Length: 215
Length: 215
DNA sequence: TATTGATAACTGACTGTTCAGTTATTAAAT
DNA sequence: ATTTAATAACTGAACAGTCAGTTATCAATA
Image 1 (tube, protein in one colour):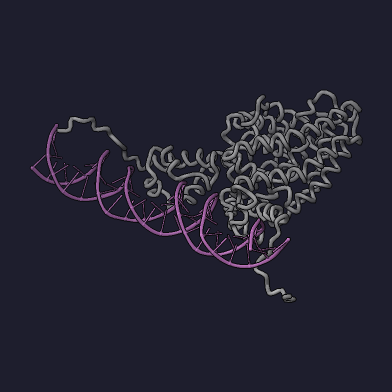
Image 2 (image 1 turned 90 degrees about the vertical axis):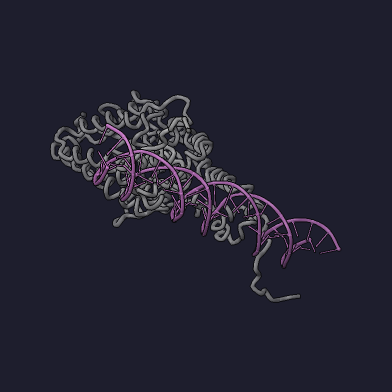
């Protein structure tokens, strides 16, 4: 009855492994991109050896896709579904989005997958398609709905297409995310995303207000 | 006697090669990203063999960096310098930008380098820094100047920071560029960039107009 | 104008390395 | 004792970079 725990070299943890591997993969892919990410690095970070990864995933590509699916599913799909039934004003909705997103942008968590998608869209067109259908179309669709109901309520001028306005809404978010991953590491003075996005909200809502009706 | 066709195999074109190699490299890097781009592919596209590239560039990395530098220098720095002395209204300036850019975005020519920078900023941090100093800071600085003079003229409300407004101006351009490279290939119905950017201009200028002064 | 020798642009086969994926083996768990 | 999670050593393919040899070009000479 070895009461000792003599520095076990490894444990068997069948059901915990996939999640740990994906988490490790996220950080390695985030740093290196897809091609430059080594399976060995992912393994080390997950506390296993390379071979172990292949017990749970058939290939590097599949690790990547699983990661995309899981990360999208957890982080974004919930948010979209939750927001679908939103009843408040467009302004309040965007204000809420800013609060949630600026923290995530700051921390760098949202930024990783979009960056990889951009980088690898040429090598994995089906990934771009997946992202488009699962994230972009749903997010833009949801936002268009919010805008359209804002028009019905007289909060937003009626002579603009909700689908285009939706893209206007998200553009500064997209820019912030890219700034955060690509440019911010070279920054002396940190950029104030919340301030920037608040300005966006203010300018956008004025710009979309019906004639003679300041918000 | 070999009455065979001499089949002139190659020419000496010392001064033309570097440019041709970089041009080829641009299209291969754009399609594949840095790591997945093969020197052999670049060579074939440039009409030479792999060895020839190494007569003009010491390494793959140096081909990549030269490309980034040259392309920035040629395409963007000129435009920035030219625009620095602009005297017209903010609205006219942006309208001009939209005309020029939407054609370039449509054709896919502007899109390639930003995509590469985003993709490889993690692997080549000094490239991100170069891009930031040579392109982003100059472009934003120039735009901030245009905005500030718009404020002095009473065309733009005075209670907003030009540096932040400048970023608001470019965000939809950035989004369009990304859309074009990453998402558009999966599109059934082509996206109308000019229409989108015109909406942007309209909403932005209303949003930035001084109180009670519709543009 | 034709021939030739020198030079340097260019080629393509070769080398060493890196890394995704495989497999023989080990040890935990039951 | 059997099963299986996990390892670590291995394989093979892909590819960046090299270099000995080939060929276009041009200047000097005839």
